[in-house]
Image 1 (cartoon, rainbow, N blue to C red):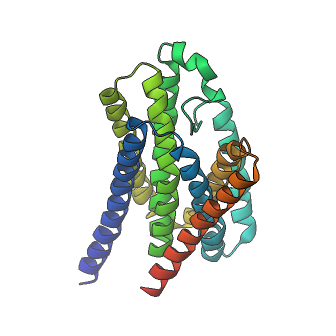
Image 2 (cartoon, rainbow, N blue to C red; image 1 turned 45 degrees about the horizontal axis):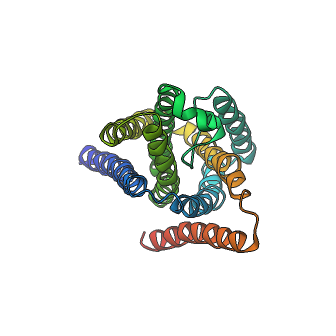
Length: 268
């Protein structure tokens, strides 16, 4: 009987992880395609501001506190956080992890993206595949730690994926890809999220002691993306009205995370 119960829990947790990753990938892909193909790039800054709030809220209000609570050692989590920030800095320096949230960005050579014969598209594809794989591992680790934390983490990642996928989609189009090919490439990179979730689930369920460290790395990932990749872009619009709008949307992102955590927490 105990074995049967364990199998049910195993299937339930794995099923939830798979549903979260697949639904998140499809949602971000569909919304990115709709925005990119309807040529409304002015939506991107709005999505980016909201994503910043979701990432900051998930990292500082949920993921890192949960890591400390699970590990019982704030030093371990702090070391994982520091190591994660340095790791993501290094990866970005190696151009393996670079997030674009506009049609063109300096990481891809500005206007040169029109004339690079697909090199920007290749780097976008490689970086996005790796990024999605890591996101899958992070989602799996969060669900293994706590169901509520898993939902909050998945929400924050989806919020970030939407503007990222829009940027990636536009880069592919500007690199000469057809709309259909760009959609297929983005869809294939999204599969990496599911693969990462499976790897994360089977690895972490056997080495539970690593979960606080992984959550520390997850928190570092969210903070690094928000502070290094997203917030600097908001400073290009320094006028008061834009600043108020950005703060309101960041607050909305944080509030969404807090609301989901509250609702799910009270439902368990």
